[in-house]
Figure 1: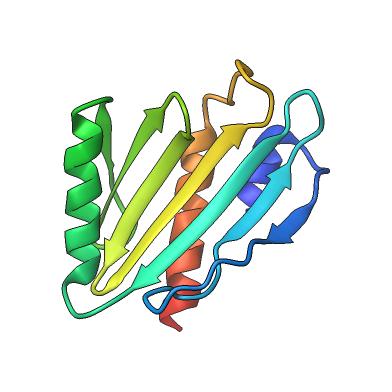
Figure 2: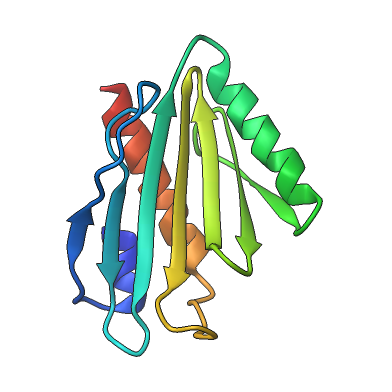
Length: 136
């Protein structure tokens, strides 16, 4: 999350969101970074399942997103990764590796606020770090 915080500034708070699921690699982690009026909520979600399930979740969401917004492939994160922007949920980097599926999403807390142009790189770094930690 440090890369994301570097983009929008220090401040905000860190919250763990309680949401348990048998297929979850732990509860999602929600972090608020930056200072009003430009605060950004960042959510990391990881799911595990049977062998090959990471690919199935990744491909399923890619197909859904391609129908509503451009999906851009990203290199060097997990088996494969991509990013997309959704007008409701914000900017997402999603990736998978074996049976692990991971998303890192950033959304402004103020409607209509601009997100930094380099946000995808920060989210990609957060995704890569999370994958490394979860595989350990």
